[in-house]
Length: 244
Image 1 (cartoon, rainbow, N blue to C red):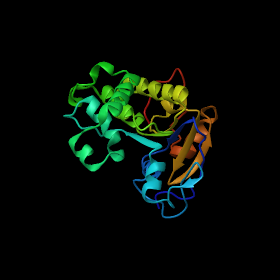
Image 2: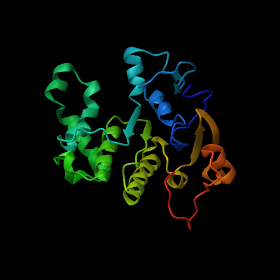
Image 3: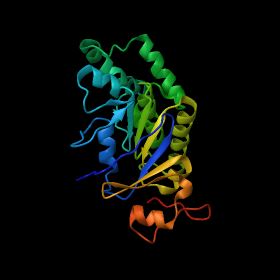
């Protein structure tokens, strides 16, 4: 059983981090939320509509409100930044325009706006393979925003990045959450940064929620409950940053 009795709700515009040790069920939870996997029991509701009970075009319309960014970026390395962002429009296109890459002026304009939003306006024609890790994640965020989601799932978005670049990416996600009203649900191993950028933390252990509260409620006892290791303590300003 990957997840059991996992129940929580998130309001529009929140920044929430799901934390916990490896194998706790965080990735499985995200795969169910974006439709990659299905629940064997229970249901996932978005705006009071059940993802599990919807099919075909109705389900696709609902899922359009959910975008995901990944640890390994999931970009086409030999394609340009602009081309990668435009791929977000493929599900809404007809067969032949999609195959021929005929995105149209409107979609191209929107993709350029998204690249500008993440600070990569000058990189539109640059092949992704020439970018740094942080720039690649910015392209991935621009691609996710291309669908104008109300929910952005960030699955370990900074795990492949150095601490400075990782903080920049989280600052960008925070800015998107605050200015655009997008709900950000992040899966993270980094407790310190999760506490810094999130309004709320959900702790998973062995497939169950063992904590759901604000960063201010995190203490030694809570961390032992989540991670099961008494050696782990809450991060503070005088402690070296540690990725859990």
